[in-house]
Image (cartoon, one colour):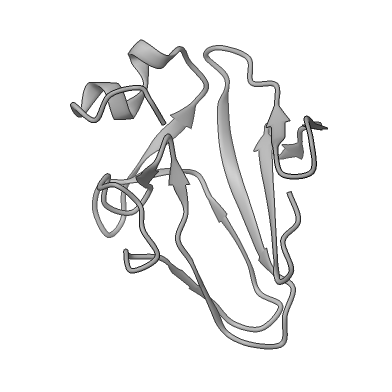
Length: 115
């Protein structure tokens, strides 16, 4: 996915997976149930940015509903980061894994499956 200043890619086994365009604003990927994945964020600009990363509408940093004012990753100009999972402490993450709506982190934490 490419925005003006940020590139977002989903990696499975360290490789970028295919994206499918539905219209001018929607991009879909095919995730295989049970497969772990990572999110690769690249700052394409010459300025420092904050990237608020969410999965199923929840921030990957704190599990709260994501918003512009929420916590995010600060990336320096042209910096890249790979996010391997939900942050559970300063040093630990729970791996992202493709699954059904009912087994999603959002559903398990009482935030529903609508996002």
